[in-house]
Length: 257
Length: 105
Image 1 (tube, rainbow over the protein chains, first blue to last red):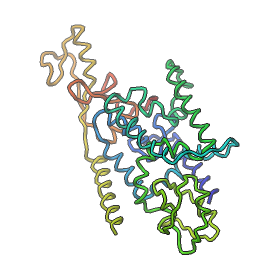
Image 2 (image 1 turned 180 degrees about the vertical axis):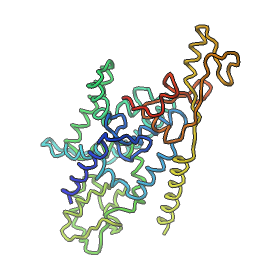
Image 3 (image 1 turned 135 degrees about the horizontal axis):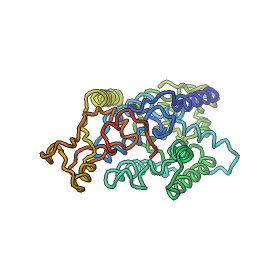
Image 4 (image 1 turned 180 degrees about the horizontal axis):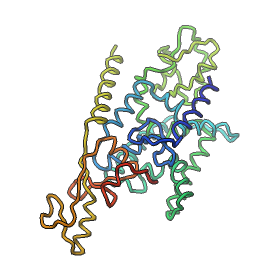
């Protein structure tokens, strides 16, 4: 399953950034910057922030994200998101591995409310602390390519962005899916909906509570005693990567809930 | 059971939001009125509906944008608010907002 996921992730990175056409009237619910010269869809986080800056709510964008969240949930994070794939690759780099406290997952909700909603609403989307001005995905896909294509006069801003990107790259090498767990504002939107998602790994009666799934879970969802869902300890974090299914000694996990 | 009902309600609500936003919601966007303010400041009288009724030279236009068109325009920060709350083009001409390739943030 890991190899299939790898292939799907590579295909999705290519499909979302082919640049053969631009369909940016539509948001695709993954973190993929629309300012990338070859991006096809719009980034929901960027559009929500920009609309809120105008005092408007982008109904179609929120609707699309909500439909995605209620049907496949954070499966998108695990299988489709290009930055999630990038982090999976980074974690394979030999580097000091470390844990982070569980409360740090709450930071992403603060990032969403603070940097995606409050900053553009009370200040302006042009404010340097607006999420898109700091977003590591935008740095990789937009700021750096455009700086190379057109040159840049805003060295200070670019340096700050590169600094944040570097910090996140280092953190992702040491902790699996660091950005998804701690910072991603789209993850903050999808996480509460993940409890209702139609696709989720579920345990059956073969489960012996051996705890192997707990150990291999990249999102550290901490399964509890209940057999309703593998991730009943922290359902909002499961990205349906199915590493637990691969490693389960009794084949007690199936994907469709 | 409660979960299924909640999912159905939320899903229906999301579908309604997507369909209404995607196909029916419209925004009236004006030409860049700040540009007309600047022209007025250098002595050129202009006509802005609701502001001036004296000149024939420049006429700012307005266009209805669907929400997907607004989404596209916002990918390059194409729309902002004028001081009276009207949505205006962030670029000199309103026509620059449709069919434009996004620029970097």
